[in-house]
Image (cartoon, rainbow, N blue to C red; front, side, top):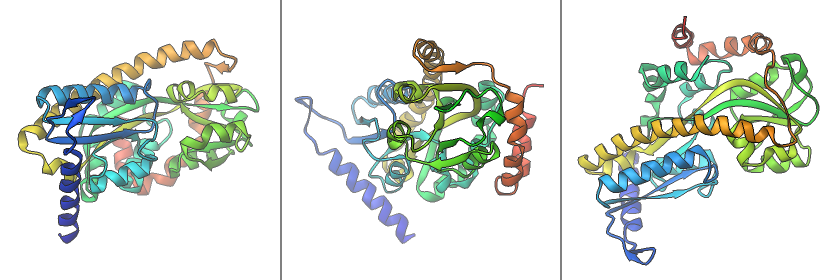
Length: 334
C-alpha cells in the first residue's frame, strides 16, 4: 500500500511538472496534462504512425487538456527502460515488442512462441479477445496496463553466410535475438547460436560480423537499413510480432473519468489504424527490398521450420500453460 501511494505521488508530481510549460512552438500551452509516449522505432515506422493517430485523437477530443509528446528512436531508452519508466509514471505510454514485457508479466511468453499464429486474422481473434486480456492481466500488479495490441508484422530471418531455404540451412549460424527465452530456444532448435544484442547495437554487430544474422519484421530490416549489412533474407514468418501499447496505471488513475474515457477510445482507434498501416507498409517494403542487393527467399520450406520448433512448445508448455496454448491452436481456421 505504501509503495502504491508513493508511485501515485510521483506520477502526480511528474504530470504537474510536465504541465507547467507555458509555451509550445512559441504559443501558449493550455494543456493540463502533458504525457510522454516512447517507442524504439523510426518516425516512418507503423509504431510512430499509430502514436501520431493517438496523439491527434486525444488532443482533439480533450480540447487541448491533454498534450501527448512522442519520443521515437529509443530516445527514452530501450524497451525495458521505457516499461520501467511507465511503472513510476516518468514515461506515460510505451509502444513496443512483447519480449521485454515478459520480465514484468511472464504470460506474454505465449506470444513469443514460433508459428503460434497462422494468419493475422487468427492473431487478432486471440489478442482482441479473452486470451489477450488474460495474458495482460498481471501487468496491473506491476503498475502497468495494456491499452491494446498494435503490431510489428511477421518476423523473418537474414544472414550473411548462405541462403536459407529450410530449417537445416540455418544450422551453425550465430543469430542475434531478443532477450526472450522462447526466441533463444527457437534459434537453438535450429541448431544455431542465439546471441542477445540490444536492437540499438544490432547494425554495428552485423557490420562487424559479431553475429552472422538476425530475425526481425521487414519494417525493422528496411527502415533501419539492416539490408545494407546482410546478404540473404528468408521469409520464414516464424512469429507474428504483436506490439503492446502500454500505459502507466498510476498515470491513468490520476486522470479524471472523462479523460480516461478519451484515452480508452483513442487507443482503440490508434490500434486499428496502426495495424492497417503496418499491413500496407509490409507489402510496400517487400517490394522496396527486392530493389536492393539483398537476396530474398520468398518460399522457404515452412513445414521444416514448424517441425524443428516443436521442442520449444514442450519446453514452455508448463510455464505458459498447455491449456492456453491449446485454446490458441483451436482458434485457427478449420
